[in-house]
Length: 83
Figure 1 (cartoon, rainbow, N blue to C red):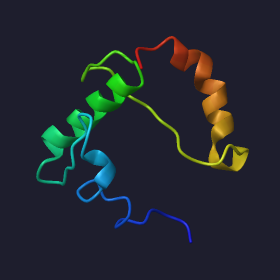
Figure 2: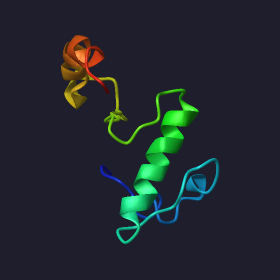
Figure 3: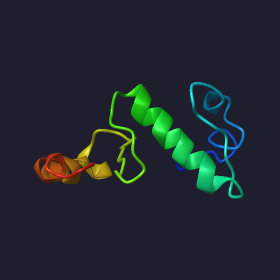
């Protein structure tokens, strides 16, 4: 019920990672595939493209039970960071 379906959400098989600079990757190609996906996402979102800048994301229910209150509390600090 909870957790990630590692078949459906497998970056090696994901058809959404086959265009616009994205790239499928596995443990063997992690060093090149994941940075390519990060750069493609940064470009798609209009963010500065750079491997040295951390990229953070949150996927979950907007509920305190999921920690969103911690994220909200940290937002002023995060906005002053190079993220």
